[in-house]
Amino acid sequence: MHQLESAREGWRVDFSWENGVGVYAGSDIPRFTTIIKSKAIARSKVRDEYMHSVQVSWNEYIQMDSPACLINHCCSNANVGIRDNEFGAYDFVALRDIVEGEELIWDHGTCEFDLSSSISGSFVERHEDIRARYGRYYAEYLHSWTPSASA
Image (cartoon, rainbow, N blue to C red; front, side, top):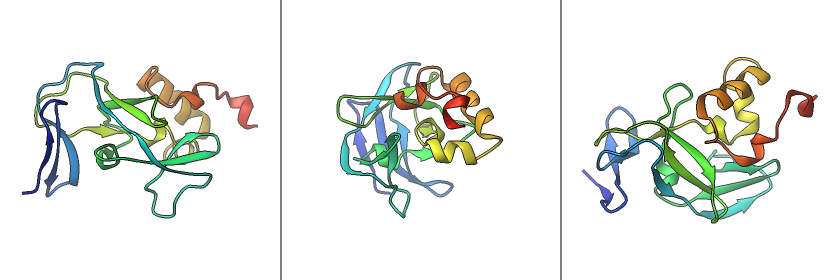
């Protein structure tokens, strides 16, 4: 088993047969702890064709460094949220207490305007769900979105 660890940071990259490569809690992580500070390693005005990029503004996409780029996605069971950081990317923050060995999961809808509106439900419902579910832990540029802004 290949494993990349950052014991000091409280996470490890590991492989599971269920989810493949992912990032796991290396120790218990209290709610609202910043777990990973990612950095932008590439920028573009368009999403890459392999979906390795994430949106950071209305018209800009980045690729994040490791281990952030290895955190898996789930719309309904995310345990980490994001916030913009000084490196042009996102910090990953525990939304609840996370126990050692638990996989870190985030919702791409917290930063992807186009994806978040098409994954489930209507455009407006999905954005309202993101705001209710993640509080302030979603991309800053989406904080200014209103239903009338997309009309």
